[in-house]
Image 1 (cartoon, one colour):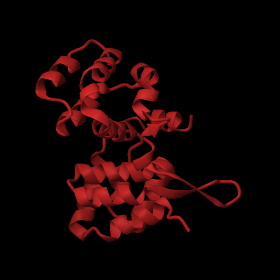
Image 2 (spheres, one colour; image 1 turned 90 degrees about the horizontal axis):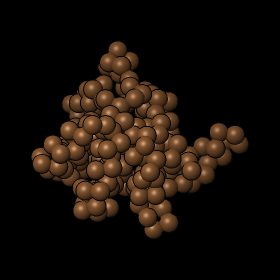
Image 3 (cartoon, helix red, strand yellow; image 1 turned 90 degrees about the vertical axis):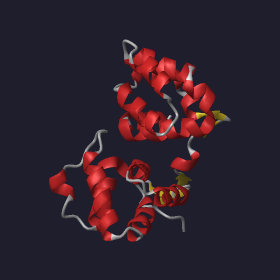
Image 4 (cartoon, helix red, strand yellow; image 1 turned 180 degrees about the vertical axis):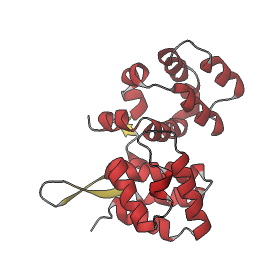
Length: 200
């Protein structure tokens, strides 16, 4: 029987010691993207309660990738890689029959008909992604943007121009690995838009 997102998250949190779990909750509270989970809700939760909260807040489909992103921001690279791999094929509830249908998780959604997901939805992302400066900050942290590119793009007059410049410059040279990193960032910072596009 295929694993569910909850199964994967349980395995991940069981591998975190108390100090790591505390740091994860701190990073979750500090997360900038919407929806957010407040400190008062998170601080006294145990592992299973937090997993339930992640799934109810971000949906079963997105909770795994949000968790991967938070693990990476906490520098838990191995745990993030392990979770990303285990999310390769997971089972999502249909919500009607009670049965589960296997579907591809975050690690394999990026290629659509031999084109990267970001290339397939280029026009929509240029038109609708907002708060691009936060995205540029993350890309610079990951080394995808150097200081010159960051400065050139961040000073453009609006988000449309910034996204277009990002596509025409750094994304062309960074290959699919860089695009995968941007996809993860967009899933964290623009969850509703990304969920809409992934359903198309």
